[in-house]
Length: 322
Image 1: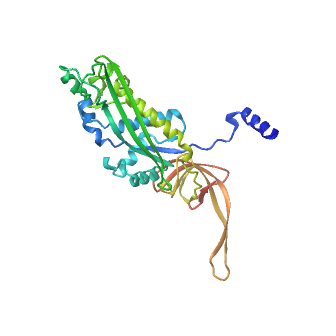
Image 2: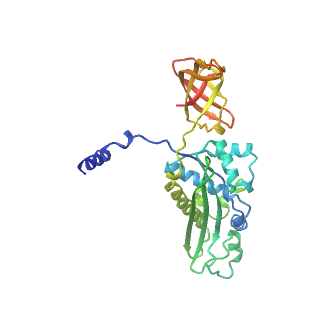
Image 3: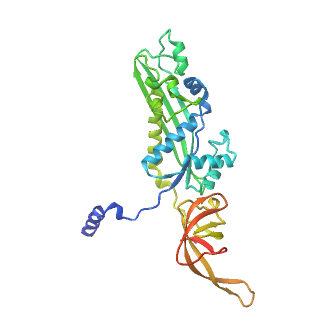
């Protein structure tokens, strides 16, 4: 008992930065499906707006700020979506998400749908203001308050097993007393280049923007709480050096084999090959370590990295997980 107490005190006093840290799990967030609320969203903004992309961007920003995961950047995700001919109908499809996740080299991928985006149907309308209310899609001005509600449903999918690791529902509400509909940020102030900027300050100041932010924060909290559900996968990576240019190596394996940007692989060279004298089959290969390669870029079939070490890498050298 005394020993356990002393150990607990020592661990508590031990600096957090000096304790061994597990690498962060890497995730991607797909654009949310929003078909069931598209007409209401179009009425709010006065045009068809991809609120599924807008909310996905807000969720990515929140997850990056929280720092629990490493999150795929939007430009990298968009590139893969284009290459894979990803369509809006695939947004909530598990099989498509797993395929994309493996191409991206992530541990898990978040997909989901927007289930509510607009007014609280219980709000009663004041007559004579229908034209203004219709412009924003909130149906009317509340006698006491205008209330916006946003609901998001999401799933986190393991790219290793295709298992649903987590189901979460985020919800946000906001209301204003009097005749305020979308607050100071309503109307054309949130428009830009023919589209609505859901990350803008003007949108954030509207009641629908406040409800959206609350729903995203609620969802991000649940995603962060479930980080331990992501499995620790021991990868077996075996590839070859396909090209050498100074310290830059191109490998014949990529995200399909589990390679991710930031990975460090050991570069080995076969010194001797032991064969069975009776059959001629290879029994064992004796290898020597040449150095390491740190991955800077990766696509589905190849990757590029920077070499470090005392040896001189050559085409045909082996690369394995350290």
